[in-house]
Length: 223
Image 1 (cartoon, rainbow, N blue to C red):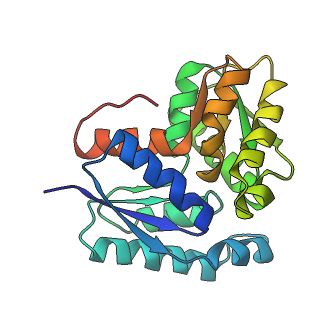
Image 2: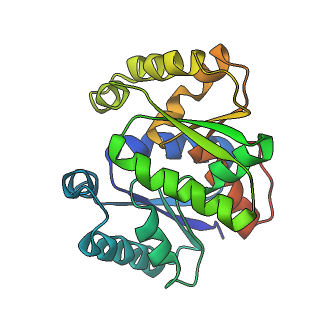
């Protein structure tokens, strides 16, 4: 029986990248989609993770469990504390979008850059990184850099421009042990970034799939 993974999306631009990663890295998984595209604009309007938003995240995770999923993976980076709250109440693994990516990047060294495109997600991801540092006792530090205009291009369907804008930012990054691409949607630029910067670069979808495989099947995969 194929392992079922419930993918919970708060924005449509995350769907393509995670399904492409599953097709490449874990085609035998049954990756199903649960969508609430109002979450992302509601999060941006609220300016913080409210109790109402947290309750919605928990309800979506519980729905994922009801489908028979063996794990839940959220694909939007702006809800870290709400996902932690949901994970504490659910018996199956519930993964934040970037936790596996941060864990992989920390293996490369302590000086980590994060290229992000959606400003409301930055603070949540930085806190997620600090939580991981505290949990592991790492000395890693995170420097966040915005790629202006990239998410607008992605939302307009212009992935080539999105990837170019992200790789332009990456090209100028020096002195880091690892580069991380903040959102599932940013992962489309992974090859472009690796082409312009030799620093080890990590994206959320392959790292998340690698962690899910390890948790559910003990099957390693390159990130």
